[in-house]
Amino acid sequence: FSLGTNLEVFFGDSQAPGGVIVNDQTILCDVPQRGPGLVDLTVENSNGKAVLEGGFAYTPAVDIGGDLFPGGSVLASYYLAPGETVVGLIGAPPKVAVPLPPFAGIREIGAFHALFFVPTWYQPRYDFVLPIPDDAGLSGGQFLMQALVGRNLWMAGQQGAWSNCAEFAIR
Image 1: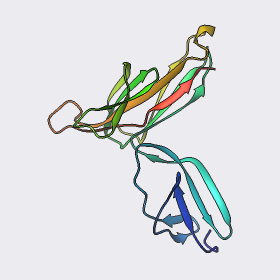
Image 2: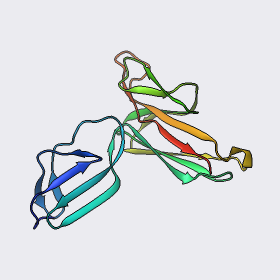
Image 3: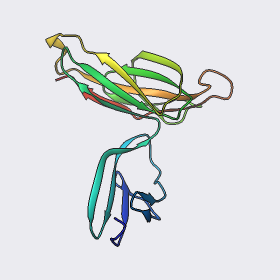
Image 4: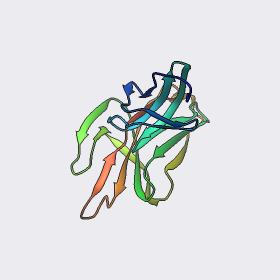
């Protein structure tokens, strides 16, 4: 990209202002504001275009993968700042909008079950594997996963935010 002209950098559908090529491995730009979640990172100029799917995480964020069928497992990857607490939730659609001050963002799962509580995680990603029972009756089931992430979640000076709400179906 260092030899091309007309640099454009996109985070999802939002163009990043101020893109500057530093060298063949580094581009500097301002990251556009938006809610939590993973977005594709796209860099394009007169020489071409490159897309890194899910290449940037607006934290906190959750992404779902795995073998989503009876007998398989759900892999939920939570993106956060090191040193934060993570509380993972699971529920069923439809999504709702429940503001819960003082936490930033919106809880989007109405009735939920707490999946896990990690008091302090020191990595930028926490992976949670949820086995799916080998029951054909679960095929077609739809689920939501979301997390509350932050510091001092239950103490004075609470600082936390809701992740995006990821939806998945069991095949």
